[in-house]
Amino acid sequence: MKKRLFSGIQPSGEVHIGNYLGAIKNWVGMIDRYDCIFCIVDYHAITVEYDPKEMQNRIINAAAVNIAAGLDPNKCILFVQSHVPEHTELAWILNTVTPMGHLERMTQFKDKAKQHRDNINAGLFTYPVLQAADILVYKAEAVPIGEDQVQHIELAREIARKFNSRYGEIFPDPKEILSDAPRIMGIDGKTKMSKSRDNYISLVESSESIWKKLSTAVTDENRKRRTDPGNPEICNLFTLHKHYSSIEQIERINRECRTAEIGCVECKKILYENIIKALSPIREKYEELIKDKHSIIDILHEGAKKCKNMAEITMAEVRRQMGLT
Ligand code: SF4
Image (cartoon, protein in one colour):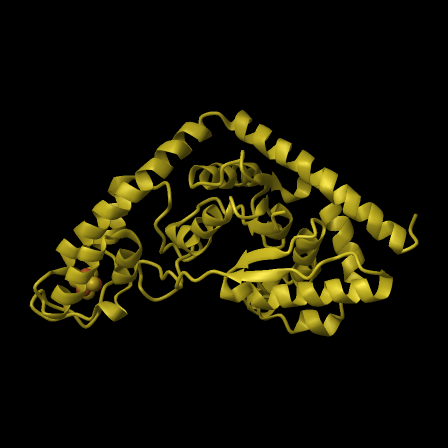
């Protein structure tokens, strides 16, 4: 029997190549090996300020882009967190076995509290408990994540063990599957690619807009003139070449950048062509899907139905062992 895998998708409105290379590409590779559940985590998204009028669009968009990028709903479950209320029911129960001190240690909470000083709410604080509930309500054993989420999965394991030792074995130990994709930096070359920093290339962006961004993207800043030799190791665009270009092209750029035989404009053009080649099928599929929002909504409802069946079984077991029924 395949192991169950769970992963959350932020309804962030824009999915960029950093998200794809760091997460979605790995998920697509695991879809046949695991029993995969992908959840659009709207209850997590509301822990920071947002525009309610935009939320449904963000959810549908996140679903459409992820399907277009390879999360085939015939091979995995895709659904919205708030459509399965058992997540929040279990989160409340898990709150009662989670020590406050453990939550206070979470670095992501500290970072987010700094970013959202005017809105440090209890939901932001107990976010990792809801994340534990998301995973445990399906008894998922595999959780693909990036480095920044390791602490949360360690906590989810600890919460599962605490619950099991107090009320009896119900939950398996969830284990992280760490993404081996390097951190994809933004086109400013300074910070991680992200929507909030506006330094990203979207998975469904037009060719013109991609070239506009690439043509002004920061390269090796020591390479001031065309005749200056560069260092690909400190150039973010070279990292992107490693994902999008052929071995011959990567070897050539690695060699010719160091001797100034190739200029940054030519190098960017090669990258541009390769990125367009890779993203065009995703963009075309996305445009096709987004024309028919109702079928995306149907896919999400179908996913929620399957998840609800599984979550109800777990919750019946939880309530029984806790003496609540
Ligand atoms: Fe970066 Fe390419 Fe310019 Fe070298 S030639 S600095 S790898 S953009």
